[in-house]
Image (cartoon, rainbow, N blue to C red; front, side, top):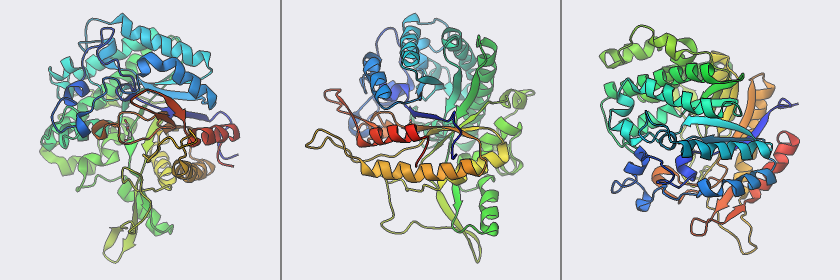
Length: 449
Ligand code: IFM
């Protein structure tokens, strides 16, 4: 049996990327509402004002989920819909939307997996310093308490932050995501530390507020390194580099963020490397950050091979013409083997693959269907590797395809299609792609047969 019988087959989305209704029912503005107005920030000046209009069409979307027998649905909650100013006054209409969504999911027999933060920070909090202000840890915990207080009688699977590395790295270091800053390393690391504190305090708030036993995790992304040849020496070398802080890409090194969460310390090599740029750690910080988690999400799309060269480890350059997605990301199925495996070896925490998928050049064919054989082939290859990890003893509990539906792909706007469901952004018509029907068979067979 490649996967356990209670393995969860799902798909994922996020609030800003699909909901639309950006200024409705009392929702406050987020940093993405602001960033999308910045000239040149987003392809063709697009934005998420309407997106997939899921806020109004969630029932239709859940009917489509049901058609492909989805078992779990990972969505995020828009913080500024709940607290328009980020803190203080609660917007009941915002909570009521998620009430309706959760009720409809449960009615359809689909387990909700809720993420509290998928990048749409309330603008008002950004104006108070955002992730650079240490107070954000308390703002986030208070928000978590409000959400769990309302939905915790029905939602039992919670994630705090989606892809800390990306929203801090791209938002505060390279400026390609909201809020669009290019700050020195010291401030980037500080924002990261505050995000880790926010995660820890939110975990405490979720557990303290939930009226029933619940499962709590987070959803980081990793770019796994893989051995070009599976010799013990190369595997050991790749393992060692995977868990080291890389001086070339310091903030992107997983151990810098994972060690605090799972082991309660920043890694020594990172502290030595960063020196005076390392964040000020106040007494109790590391205990707050290291909250026991029931699972870790892992968002995995692509990775890189390393070989043992004459002068030490060497990256393997992909061959010209090697498979690429429409976003020109490498197709590297073995990331779903080595990523979970190396993670599990070090942190011994159950895993859900909370995102995996590809952008593809999809359109509605003359027969009215959307034929996306590349996505089927891509996902087959990746799932075969995840099965291998599971068979090797890695505790993998679920897989969420990114994405349920085509949506607003951040700075790339609507050009990149990553969904199982095709969305016509002019008419808002939806079409289940071939891959969606194929996924239904995968779900029925609990894996690739
Ligand atoms: O669309 C994003 C998602 O919001 C976060 N993870 C990667 C996806 C594809 O780029």
